[in-house]
Image (cartoon, rainbow, N blue to C red):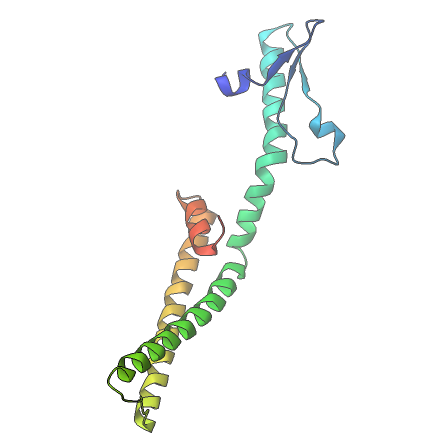
Length: 166
């Protein structure tokens, strides 16, 4: 047994041993908040009770998070959110570039006169940039979802980075 589990074992004045599983996440469930009684008659009974308590702890604390992660791996929520952010970021970047160009030209007493050709070039560049960023995002989200499904390391950290959560 590790010290992590030993620190959760409590003995009352009568000598009964219980395990505090730390299941304070579900306030509506009275049973989940009560410590599990650990029998001490034999080693097998103690280990069986500890294993049961650990399994209950896993089901109440880790399984819901794992199910949420798998749900993200099987739907397009991450992709949709990131594509929306991409659109905003590209618009903001081009707006800032236009503003910077206007300020640079203003220092020389000039105004940026966009010709039809210049406007077309900017529109094409913006479309190309948006398509490139969205394609890279699709590839990254697809790779992330494959990592989540296959259980490869680093998926939760990558999820926090891509999903903007954390």
